[in-house]
Structures are given as structure tokens and as C-alpha cells.
Length: 193
Length: 193
Image: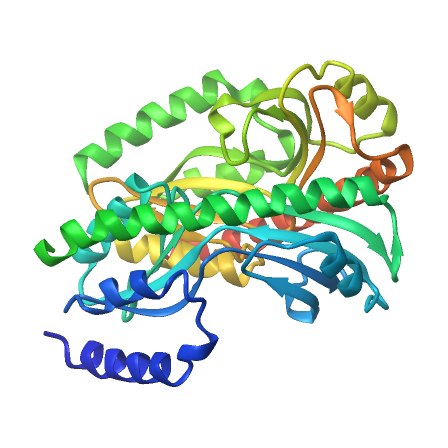
């Protein structure tokens, strides 16, 4: 067993314990299953979310500002309240699928986990780093990235926003189902890796 | 040198030559730089594009139908003509950044290429497969995925479509710049890998 891996895992689990109130409850059982394995630990995760942001230029997420983010079903009132905070830059409405970052002790174990991820519907599962720290990302595909307007001014009307709310809620519902599916598949297999 | 790698590379280069008219001219010089290296070959690529599709359910890209796709600047007339072909399912407007799939002979060479990709603004560069065939994906981040309506009926108006056209053209312009940047960086370094 790799000494670096063990000490990194210890730190990651402590930090997860400290921040436990900030972790979405929908994904906690899955994190526990992965962290119970000797070969893996989780570093960050999201159970799927919808978010409103202001971004000065396309792709420049580092300069972005959150207007609102939600892990559970949204309604138009919440969306409109958040949009009222918009000031400068392009306003974007995002729906994002579940995503997990996991460190593995060895490449062959990482491969197993990526395979299980893909077979469980997390079709964007990849290796982010394969030297030193082995990091994989398990992610699903359901998403939208929609520009809504600029400098606080909306370029779409209420009925369109309402369609996005519906599709956003659909992404959240699908995300929760996919997490349960991965949880089920992993709990059967992970002890054998 | 791996025999499998060499025979796969030979096949890939032949197929690229056969399909050369279907490859976007903006990305050809970059493909040539990568394929000139003993350690790599390209399998598929896109220089960045905007596309209109009909998709029966979110995330189900395999059942999707193209209404139109473009690698060069678009205008409202083209968009409206393509939307007129819509029949069934949710209509989506996509803008996608440049993306390249590359096979490497060894993991350490793949690592070098992913590093150069990330440093050149292809921030979504990852390893798709690390056993048997080593496959990496170099991709940038600029994109949108916008639902426009359902069953041929638009949920947004012309001024909103026009905003999307503008942002789509911005994605295409940025994509071309990023390809040139990666081309410049790779041509300096790739001979040393």
C-alpha cells in the first residue's frame, strides 16, 4: 500500500467529516461506499445541480459570480429572485449532472471504477491524472448551458424560463436516479476490486 | 515500438487520407503536426462547431437527429431554414469547442500531450482509456447547450435566437484561435517528446 495515498486519504476523509453539512445528502451514501474501499477516496462531488451565474466572457468560469444554485427542485419564483441580483456580464442558466472526483491507489483499480461508472450511465467518466496522484472523474451527460441575457437584461421571456425550469428539474430527477444506480452497482462490486 | 500501435496508426492515416475532404480545413495543420510524431496519431477531430438537433430525451444523443451543423460563421437565415425541418422531440442549439482524439504509444507520452493541451487552453483535456489502446481527448471549454422548443414549436423569439447566433460565432472564433495556439505550442515541443 502506497504511503502517500494513505496519508492523502486520511486528510480527505477528515476534510469530508468537517464539511459534512455542506455535502448534498443525495450523494453521501455513494461517497461512503467508495471511501470504505482500501483503494479509493473521494475528493469532491456534486449530486447534480442547477445554477444561475454571471460570466464576463464565454468559458471564463473563474471570473464568474453565482446568482443562485440548487440541488433540489426549483420553481420560477426562486429563479426570478436570483436573476434580480444580476448586474454585469452574460447571465447563464446551467443544469449539471452528478460528478465525482476520486483518487485511486493504482491505475488498474482506477480503470475498474471508470468501467463501472460508464456501465452505470456515467458516460463522461475519464482519467484526469495518471501520474503521481491517480485521479478519475465519474460524470453523467445530462446538462444544459443557456445564455439568458446580458448586464441584468433578459433576452428571453417567462414561458421560456419556465421550460428551462422544467428541463432543469428533469436533470435533477435523472441525476438522483443515476446516483442510486451507481450506488447499487458499486456496492456489489467494490469489495472485489 | 509497439507493433499494434504502428498498424493502428497506418490504418488511421489511410482513413484520414480517404476522408480528407470531410475534415475541417482549420484543424488539418494541427492533425499533421500530431501525426508526424512517432508517438501519436489522431482518430477523430472537430475544429469547433455550432449545430441544431432534435433529441427525444435529455442526454439521449444516440437518438438525436441533426437539423444543421456549421464550422464557420452562421447567420439567422441558415438557423431559421434548419429549424423549419424540426418535427419531433426537443430542439437543441449547440456550440461546441474544438476536440481531438489521439492515440499514444505510451502513457508517459500521453501525459506530455495532455499537459501541453491544458497549458494551451484546452482545459478539458483528459485520458479516455489507459489500458490496451491509450486514448486522450484534448478539448476546450467554450460551449452552450440550449433547448429551443419542442415538436417543431419554438419557445423563444427571434431576438433570443440572434443572441445565440452571436455567441455561437464567438465560440467559433475563439475555437480557431485556440487551435492556432495549440499548433504553435505543439510544433515547438512535439519533436522532443
